[in-house]
Length: 295
Image (cartoon, one colour):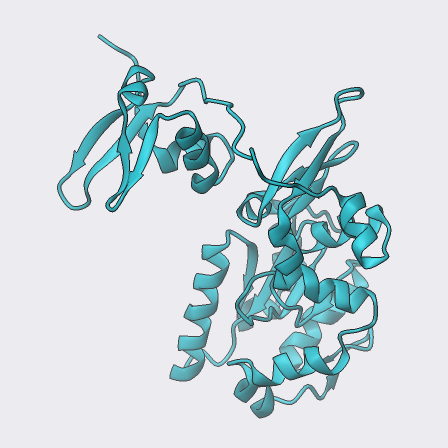
């Protein structure tokens, strides 16, 4: 009896720690699949390399592969120009180190023992993993779309002190503006942050006393204008405090926001009123799950 396990392209991509789009590009380049009006079609070459069709009663036919198949490594970047952090830095009159720190801050890359590795979000935004041939140190290069990426450009402006009024206008024009107008930031936390509720003040104070660097109402590194309650750069963790549970409008806003976090696979810690009164017990455990140790 065969021990071969067949899994979908999405499942295979997840197993290989890459985006489905990235795996599709590899399979297209190797001519294992072709694109048509209905999506992707399996080729004879694909069938020879473990591909087959499976039918689902609800979703129809889809392609499956041997979970241990050898992934084709034909280059998918032929004809494309890619830019290193050094080249990007030159355009903005910054250092390559600063550019990498910016890309790390928005969750596109992660620090390795030496060098940088790309994240799933980074692959979705035009990045490609490279390795230095001499010393094996990993680094990431980017296609030209990085120069139009709103999250990246926004941080560039902030770092260079050019954001100012344009950033504030985006905040004022966002869908959350009515919420911000209703709940004025009038509570001063120990670290000087002006926050919108006593609960947020307690959370901010806890993070400050635990010596955890954090930002308040940081914009998520995505196209949508969405702002978190707190952001912890170490670990790329977002914290949301859900209050006003009985308010229908707030409940709708909460669900929409949770969908955004799920869509981009961001690390999220959710806190309730009950949690706020037990932060010493709750937060250390939740932070540790994401690799951040306290005390």
